[in-house]
Amino acid sequence: MLLVGCCNPRGERSSYNGLWYTQDELASMVSAGRITGIPVKIEHTGSNVGTVISSYLDRDGALQCIMDIDEKASVEAALTAGFVRDGIAADLSLGYTVDVLHSDNRLKAGEKRLLEISVVRRGAREGCHIQAYQDTGAQMVYVSQPPAADTWAAFDL
Image 1 (tube, rainbow, N blue to C red):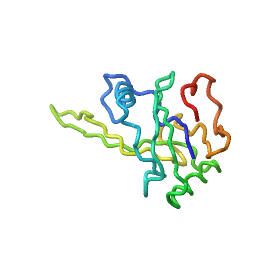
Image 2: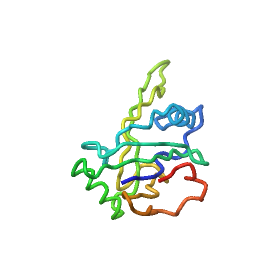
Image 3: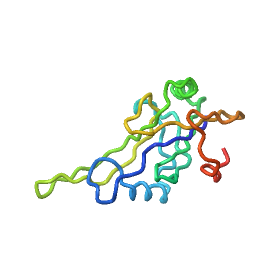
């Protein structure tokens, strides 16, 4: 099963000092290809149920990912695909660490490391939803409003 969805809304401004990703950090990760190959989990736990195969920033700057869930790999992966089909798990959430530095009596967010993307029942960030999925040999199923025609023109799903 292929999934397409928003994993993170537009990033924060470059002067932001906090735990969320800035727009510059998102753009850097996408352009360097550091999101491709990141594991996909269910509810941030258990075994990997899939892998990110592509990522891009949409017109609004939100992080969009295409993920492959290998249903034949494990029971968890098969359950995850079923949860997506049944609308039980319809959101996405990033799992990452943040180094927090302490200097001059202030806390500063340091390097952020993306660990995984999770299929979840309810995401923590606004707008981070699975937008569509496609089973092998089947038509794409739109979970939310279909995107503009040119949004996925570069991808042949």
